[in-house]
Image (cartoon, rainbow, N blue to C red; front, side, top):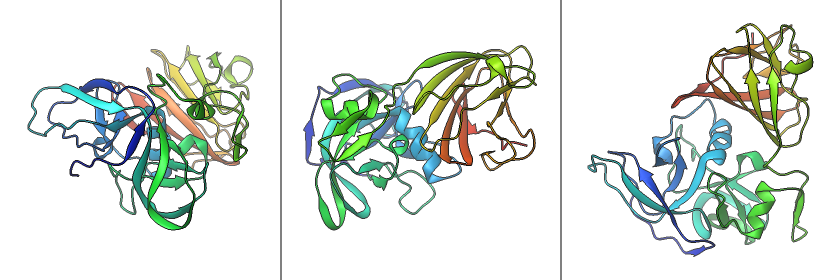
Length: 294
């Protein structure tokens, strides 16, 4: 997409991180971090649904590009971006109230769009908060976009996305924030005791130890909006919901159903309903859906 200078009010000084070689970036692009470089959303390998992509990108969203790079730039080089700002951003047509949430979008297609946002209903899918009322449907929305990946200089409003329970000017209340506890779990033959992840709010990071690829880790009680990030070492494990016969992982359910997790994998599991978890796995720099529980 062409360079676009959207009306923007910055909350913090721009940051600068290398962009990848031979990857074009336009001013105004929404950017994510792939573990090494910042890239526009069109470089992202999409998952099975727009909602899965929204949840994954929300965790690695870095901000709005302030500089451009050409596909002809054959070596990695700096990209300047704004991690936190109020911006008038193109959006999928909708009405908005202050406090509504916005996330990234496929915009009716099957891949990410670099310079557009969409109204979302839950905080785990959001990259920003709407700050202006639109009683009639609009295709441009004023929102405060907030990077969870670079929370440097995060303004007070943004803390509601990242910190403890807060109310935004009486408009919306988030009962728990997205910076949650960390814990260590050891996979067991039946998933009990040290293999079970306790309920701990909206977000938690779990370090998994496993002595056998057939040992089991059990996800917490399925509460929609809950995000569990798991990271294991050189031995894989099986991931199971708390009620595998009725609570599915990526569409798979059944007696003792479980998903095999390979060695050295970071898993991001998002509870989307009271009976479903959707999960993706990152091995090195390869991102893919976790296998359906079976």
